[in-house]
Amino acid sequence: MNDRKTLIFCDFDGTVAKKDIGYNFFYHFSEGKNMELIPHWKAGQLTSRDCLLQEAAMVRAGPEEIYNFLDLFEIDPGFPGFVELCRKNDIEPIILSDGFDFYINHVLRKYHLAHLPLYCNIGRLENKSIKVEFPYENHTCPRCGNCKGERMAEIRSRMEVPYRTVFIGDGLSDICAIEETDLLFAKKDLERYCLENNIPYNKYRDFDDVARQLLADGHLKE
Ligand SMILES: [Mg+2]
Ligand SMILES: [Zn+2]
Image (tube, rainbow, N blue to C red; front, side, top):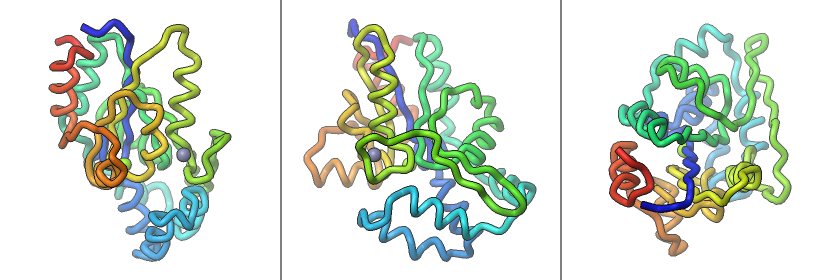
C-alpha cells in the first residue's frame, strides 16, 4: 500500500462522457462550420479561448433545443462505479475541462453526479446565444482556455501534505496536465501525443480499466 494520499483528476469530453460533447455540440449548432477552426487549434495556431469564442458565436439556439440535443449523450458506464470506489477511499474525483459548464452539468445531473468538483469554462445560454466567460486565470499557459496543469498545481498547493496525482484523459486539451501528473491514463489523441513524445502513460479504454489498475497498484482499496 502506498503511503501518500491521492488526488484523481478526470477530463470530461471523451473521458467521463463517452463522446466529445463539446465538439459534437458545436458541430451540430454551427452546421459543421466549426470544422474550419479545429485544424488551426490542433496545430497550435489558434488558442482554445479564441476557438471557443468563435465556436460559441456560431450558435443560434435556445436552451430547450440545446438541452434536448444534450440529452442524447451518455457517460462511460463504468464512471459511477469508479466514483463510488473513490468515495470508499475518501477521494472525490475532480473534473477538469476546457469545455463548458452548461453541458457538463446537464449531463452529470442526469447521472446524479453533479456534486463532483468541476473546473471548466462558463457558457451562459442567453437569447439564443452563448455568452462565454473564462473564470480561471492562466498565468503561464497561452494555449488553454482553462489550463488543467495550472488548476492541478493550484489544487495541489492548497493541500497540507504532498499528494500523488492521477490524471485520466483522451485529448490535446490534456497536454498541460502531464507535467503535474504522477500517474497518467491516456487514450486517443493524448495517447498519440505521449507516444510521440516518449511520455510514460497507462493505456485504458474505460473507467473499469482505470479502477482495475488503481486497485492492482494499491492506490485504491476495494
Ligand atoms: Mg477530452
Ligand atoms: Zn495549458
